[in-house]
Length: 603
Image (tube, rainbow, N blue to C red; front, side, top):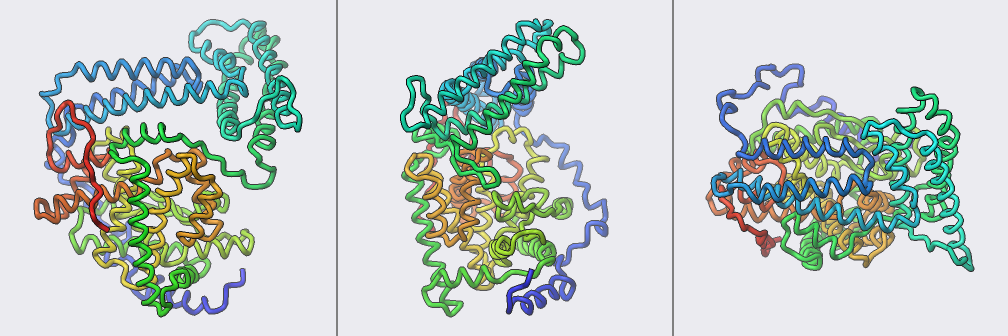
C-alpha cells in the first residue's frame, strides 16, 4: 500500500528505537540466553500444601461431568439435559450433607463455589430446556435424530429398516416446516404458517449444525460394517444430510437475513432481566443491572474529564475527538508492529518489577509468544487477544486499501501501549501462568470478573502509578477505559431488550469514538455466542472490585502491595467476593450470602 504522507519519518524513528538503538528487552535476556536453572522454583516452598481440602472433590466433579457428557454426546438433547440436571442435584445434596465446620478457609471457599455452581448449572439447564421448547416448531425432528446417536451408546444393534424410516420422516418434517416458514414470510400467511423469529432461528441453525455432526458420526459408525444397515439407510441418510444443509442455508439467508458473500447480521440472544438476575447472583454481584449502568456512567464522566485534560495537553482545547484522531494516526510502518509489541511487553515487565508490585518469575517472562490475527478474524476481533500467546491485529498485504487503513488506525502505537500489558504481563498471560500452577481446580469457576477484571485493574493501577508518560499514551489508555464503561452500558441494555445491536454500534461510535468497523466488530464479538451475557460487564466491575479490595487491604497498611497481588493470583480463578475471603483469610459461615457492596466514591 501507499503509506500516508507524514507517517514515514515518525515510523522510521520509532523503528530505529525498536530495532536496536535502545534495549527493547529492558535488561531481560533473550529466552535462549537465560539460564534454564532460573526456571526451576524453590522446591521446598512448593512441598507445602497449595490448595484447600476440597481440591480433589472439585477435580472429581470435572472429570465425572466430562464422562457423563461423553455418555450422552448430543448437545442439548432432552436426555443429556435431564441426566445432567440429576447429576447436579445429586452433587448439591451431597455437598449439603458434608461436615462443613471442619473445613478451613480455602475449603470453605471451594464448598461455597461448588454449591453456587450446582445451583447455576441447574438454572442453565432450565434455560436451555425453555429454548429447546421454543425451537420445536423449527426442529420437530431433533429429539428423534438425537435418539439414534444415544441408542448407539446402549450397544444394541440398530434396526436398519426403523432407522431408515426415522431418517425419511425427519426429511419430510424439514420439507413441511420449510413450507410453513415460507408461508409465514408471505404477505398473506397460510393457516399452518410459522411466523419466523430471528433469534430462535439462529439457535436452530446452531443446533442443526451440531445435530448434523452427530448424525454423521452415528451413520459412519455402522454403515461400513453392517451390510443390512447400509442397505436400508444409505440413501435416506444422503437425502436427509442434503436436506439439513439446505434447510440451514434457508434459515440463515431467509430468516436471519445473512446474504452469501457478506458479513452475517448481528442478531444476538438477549437473556432478559430474569436471566441477568440469575447470572449476577452466580457472579456474586449484589447489584441490579440499572445500578451497574449508573456506575458505568459515573466512570464514563471521569474518562470524559480526563480526555479534556489530554486534549489540552496536545494543544487541542476541549476537542477530545481531535485528540483521539491524532492518536489513531500515530501507527508504525508495515512490518514494524511485532517489534513494537515486543518492546511494549518488556517495558511493562520492567515497570512492575522495578516497583516490586508482584512476583514475576523468569519462566513467566519468557513463556509467551506472538502470532498475527488473520483478516477474517479481525472482523470480529479488530484489536488484540492474549494469554500465553498474544494475537496481534495489523494489516496484511492482501487487504483492501481501506481495510488496511482501518487496521492501522485501530492498532496504533498508543492503543497498543495500553493493550499489550493487559494481554501479557501483568494481565492475561500472568493469570494463565499462575492458574496452571496454583489452585488449578478453580478453573471450573472461571469468571470474566476475575479474568478481565484483573487485567483492567492493572489499567487502573498503572494509570495511577504514571505508566502512561505522554499525552498520546494517556489517550490510548483512556480509549480503552471509556470503552469498558461503554461495554457495561450497551451489553446490559441489549440483554434487557432495550437496545438493538445497531444501537450498540452507534453508541460506541458516538460516545467512545470508535471507527464504525471496530464498533461493529466489538458488538459482533459481544453477541455472537462466544462470550457469556455478563462478559463485557466483568471487565470494569471486576476491576472496581479489586480496586475496593486493594483500598481495604493495601492502602490501609494491612498488607504489602506485592503480597496482595501474589495472593490474588495464587488463589485461582473465582468471583472476586471469594478472592476477598481468600486474601483476607476469612472463614466463611455455612449460610454465607453475597452481600459485598464494593462500589465506593472513586473514581
